[in-house]
Structure formats: structure tokens, C-alpha cells
Length: 182
Image (tube, rainbow, N blue to C red; front, side, top):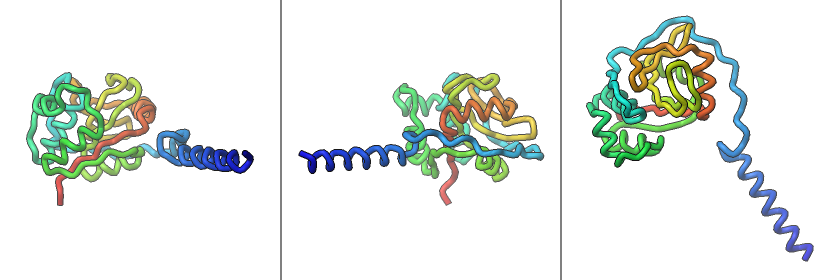
């Protein structure tokens, strides 16, 4: 009986260690110190689709920016009217011949993306200014005051850094990066 208990105990300890090592199961790391950029940057020619389409509108903006014109309505049809997951958005972009991935970004990566003229789609886990919890927004710029976003009926709205970063952190800093295949 003791030998059986030892094997169960070892298996349990391995399972507990495995779960702690899996992202999302372990406690989130505290945010790293972040220096707000001193310059103002705006990604030009990102279209804006005023709609209640949320993630579909955000994806349509970034796909159109990357040379694959599409409407939020077409994306909603492709999703079957379901609320989209990040995986579904990535698969739709890939089906149109674009490179796409979702990941847990950090503020310096967000600023780097803006500097390289690559709009990011971010998901917010809490309200931030004019943005509601669960909103998807397209980051189209940044400046010392905040992040410039497109979301639903908001075109190039500046959301102050602190509320934006807090709301973004509550979604695990989820970002979708979509670009042309090289």
C-alpha cells in the first residue's frame, strides 16, 4: 500500500508542478516598469469601420490595412454570428493569406509595433475610458499621453496610459498581430 501511495503522491506533485508551469495557470507576473514613449506616432492609412461589430470590425481594419480589403459584415458571416475567439480571428486572417498570431504582449512590444507601422488588435479585460470591458481595439498610435485606438465607434481616440494598461492587463495583455506574408 505504501508503494502505491508513493506513486500517487509523485504523480500528484508532477501534475501540480505541470499546472504551475503552464501559462495562465500560474499567477500572472506583475507588470514590468514601463517608460512612456516621448514621441508621438500614428500609423497612417488604417481604415476605420464604425460599427458594433467589435472584434470583426477590428479584424477588418487590420486586414484591409494589410492589403486584404474586407468588411466587418463579411467577417461576421464567416464567424457564423458567434462571438469570435482570438483563435478564430487568427484563422480567418490566415485563410486570407496573411501572417497572424495572438500572444501575450507587453507595453514595449506595443510601442515597437506602432513604431514599425504594424497596428495591433488588443483585447481589454476592463473598461478604459470610452472602451468597455471585453472590447477589441486596434492600436494605431501612441504618444506621451496615451495609446491611440480605433474601437467600435471610436476613431483615433487617445486612452491614457494608466487606464489602458490596467484594462489590457486584465485580459492577460492579449494582442493579435496580423501582417502580410513575406
